[in-house]
Amino acid sequence: MPPISLLPSNPHYLEFRGRPTVLVTSAEHYGAVVNQDFDYRQYLDTLAADGLNLTRTWLGTYREKTNHFGIVGNTLSPAPGRFICPWPMVEGTGQGDDGPARFDLSRWNEAFFDRLKDFLSEADRRDIIVELTFFCFMYADEMWEVSPMSAKANVNGIGDFPDRHRAFSLDNGPLLELQERLVRKIAVELNDFDNIYYEIMNEPYCLMDGTAFLPWQNRMIDVLVEAERDLPKQHLIAQNVQNRTMMVSALHPSVSIVNFHYADPEAVLCNYHLGRVIGDDETGFKGQTCHPYRLEAWRFMMSGGGVFNHLDYSFSVATPDGTGLVEAESPSFGGPELRRQMAVLKRFMDDLPLERMRPHNEVFNAFGALGEKSDLRILADPGQIYAIYITGGSKLRMGLSLPHGKYQATWIRPSDGHVVRRDRLDHDQTSATLVTPIFSEDIVVRVDREPSQ
Image 1 (spheres, rainbow, N blue to C red):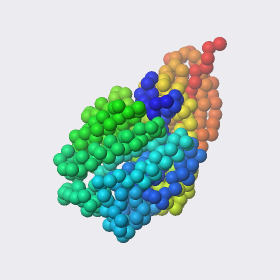
Image 2: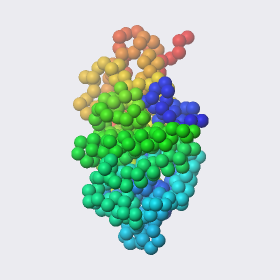
Image 3: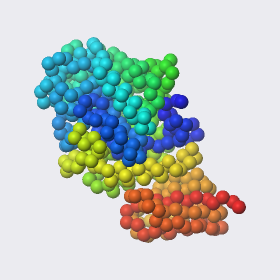
Image 4: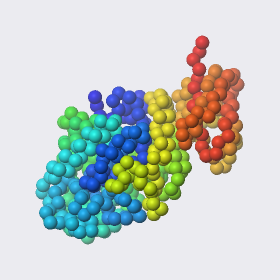
């Protein structure tokens, strides 16, 4: 069986173990492997029980200090001495407050690779896909100084330059060779796994216009592709291109997943021509209720997106089961109720014939029926199935351009998956009319053509 791959008949979606799939999750803040105190088995049990199928994990080239970004219980900020990465920590270091740990970059840390492989094996047993992110933008000098790639955090003198941004340039001295070695090592060590794909760098666009690190990223992609060329399995590669939205103009041909953060639906629509999966790879900064994240997820996926990853701060070392109270200073939200709502979206998408579904908002021909705060997104297999997601509330009357015939409309509440109402449409006019139930925030309807008698 091949690893997770693009769905051949519709590469805006994925295929895993012979079945079309989307990836939908509300998951921890990327420290499951590098934080030795995090119980990833209990964490993965929670995701599986909640019906979610993705987690994003970082590989030890980056870490954070306590309360960076206001995150309470940040799994990317391990306790002193509990950070683990691809290189061994030098004995006697790493016992202070988040440091000063120093690493020997001339040797591999087999304990790290053992932990990483066990994590991936446990995820695989639960049918959970893992996005593995090699590198991350260094947001501040204090982050760069605790990275093993910095000369201040290794005993090899590698990464000895004042400008932290140089770490991701082709002019970074011996660090470039180290980065290439790491990419090759990971590619070989993890080649057997089917439930992984790789992302090169998190938020590389934080410097200037987003192109500053592009030559370096392309080099890492080339190294990864070459490393896997003669191996039994070749894995998908993702590239993180921007926050919210943009039209992507420079994309390496080996990239199959285009990741946005805090994405707008237009990120899908203006890049749909690429014929690749578009992902909303990180969410947050919309308050601490379920509502805004549920709407973001549904609007994005119902515009043709294939991946949705909410950043869920209810997971921590103290609460690997995701029951932690998300404190006010944390920049996002999470918890069991939000994950239940995300699972409704996952089940709804799984029940669609993804190989035939594409965005088709043009079938809605009565925009005047929507209030100015309303929004509508349509996925369809024209003439057969229409999935329509509506936000804004109230009771709306809509016109749809459908082929003549008989249809059944099933109205579903996205917050809990409850079927609100079923209607039959038997029309022979130019436009079929749908009238929504009264709803307060959002509603989704699936319109299925009835088989001919």
